[in-house]
Image 1 (spheres, rainbow, N blue to C red):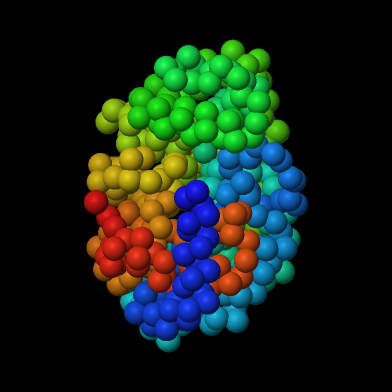
Image 2 (image 1 turned 135 degrees about the vertical axis):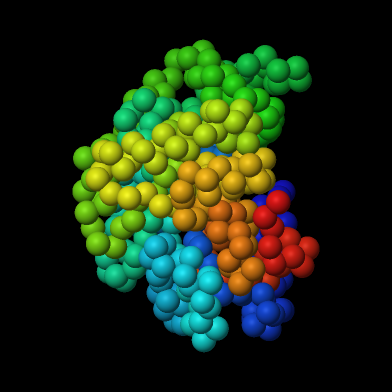
Length: 342
């Protein structure tokens, strides 16, 4: 229902012309685009993370549209300076890919090279090592196999995709508030006989793969923690270790400076004022959230709390993308606030 309402809102903003008319006031200086997986579409009845996948053809269409709209695609290393010294005549776009999937190299990279578009990959070191699970996919598969943690009210049978989605949403809503969420999901995965680390090794780039990707002049590597936890649920020592450790390991393994971080999950519960301060203290130049929004001059004072525009697999339409790029939907979502940094 949430996605249906959001899609209806995008359509209304597009059809009415409001997004286009409002864009001079709402599009800001530019946008940081967030991607996860890029691969050919595979239809599934139960697919709670469809929003995290787009096709290579849609990525191509998005990059073409940015050019048509006059956007300059810049490397993340130029982002802070571009915010501090705006060019009102030329909006910018920064392209970011979270987690370090193999399909970033296999399917996204050829499209990025076609457009000569600089991009950033935020890699979780545990995924590259094959020592940390892709816990959200483990949770989805456990639910698909009918496993539960025995939460009160959980269904005894999960026969349909709708039932599975309700169970998944309930479990994730319950688990995400727990500091021990990763352990809880590991227990559930074991109960469902899921080889969690095999999935990470299959889907994510290993160190050789990251090294090869980082050698491309278009690519910048950024940190995405060690094990991809919700940092906001962790104690101070754990949050610091996750952020500092990932930076240090990436720099040691790849022989490059890591100056940017994307907070896992990245919403207000996962990344807030404490995480922003830690990122600044550790020495990151920028910190990227998943809070929806575009970039305004005021973000110059909040470089570790930057919003992103999610290129969502549920809305693979250039008309929808135009509305998002205008910033009008985010202006409404944020209730007229240009900054959402607390």
